[in-house]
Image 1 (cartoon, rainbow, N blue to C red):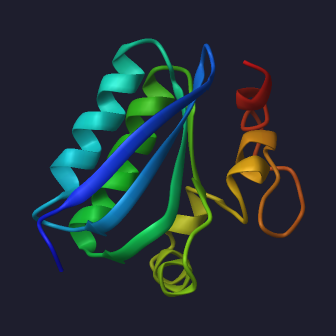
Image 2 (image 1 turned 90 degrees about the horizontal axis):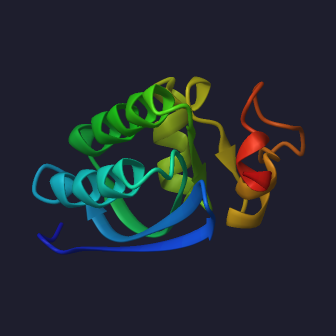
Length: 132
């Protein structure tokens, strides 16, 4: 575990952004992710895709951060999606039930299109982010 978390934001439309995360999302770094993502939502971009391809570790604080960001985006009329999630994190998200709240998408492109890892469309309203 490290105290370093790199977060980059790429706007894909006026209302959608991809937040790419690299490093560990844990007690020491979760606030960094929260701060960056909240700033994007506060700028009027309510639909976020978290690109987790470069995430090495997530603890319970990180999982809580994902749920908190989900609530923030929903309150802003948006959505939060997880994309390119490493296998070890997919197991954790599934075992804890978080995948019921946040569907996992195989790629960022799939998340933007609303396609879940199983190839189906995400929950009602999730597909809206791609065209917003």
